Image (cartoon, rainbow, N blue to C red; front, side):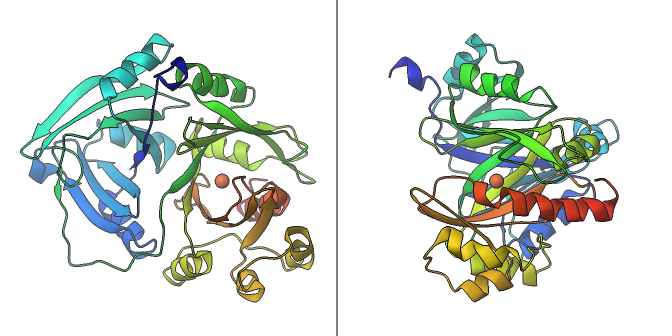
Length: 365
Ligand code: FE2
């Protein structure tokens, strides 16, 4: 193994959200997004300060965790930030070595390597800090056969709405303070061994009113992609500033989840109560000339407000939900890649104008 591969990562292991009510959040991800019940931990399993429900769809695993007492770390985090992502867990072959490698390069430890055991084997985890109060947890599960992690029991309710075709985590975006993007980019480059895939400045990402800058970091096998945004000066308050104001600091802004049939996925989610950003009809006046030939029914795409973009390698279809909690903070992207490996640069203006319309309604523009 050469120096370049000091931190091999197989993929996203799970994403943990700290929420106000894990039981109700789990129901939302089941009913509206089609996640399937997987595992549970709480008072019944010996926990005293928190409850976690684990749901899964395709390769996407979410852990919804809520505090049970006011002095719980989970309760305090949720009181400050609202519902949001606490941990982005990375699936590795050797958690101890991963931890040692990043620590020797300047990472800040949150949890030393810890062995968790039950009858079904053992899992090793270790955690480090990333932007804001967010953490990365290395998860080594090659010696484990249980449903999720030791300490969790299978969660097998009767209620199991059908999935909506979500397959895997495509990318996870972080919002950081003005002037901080390059520091976070340097952390992913120097400490984690990631490379910069692409960079967007405020000329790429601006509307008449607001602007932001973004750099996309990726690990060597491209299974982990983390765009990092910071606000740029505009006439009005950008969506990144709005996020930072309401999340009280940096944090994960959106998770893009892949599907191979976006019309089906978005249609199902809409039917089940997920709110998406709208796209003005004028967008479709010019988009077909810009993107050229595509396989999908153009009328269906327009009816579903789906955005289309093309790069050298193909095209992509994408759509964004409105924030999925009370604060205007975290949201989801649904993405259907038809060869394209980019991030929908051609849609940035339309997307940010759609977000500005929502900010206007909230009085936060
Ligand atoms: Fe995205």
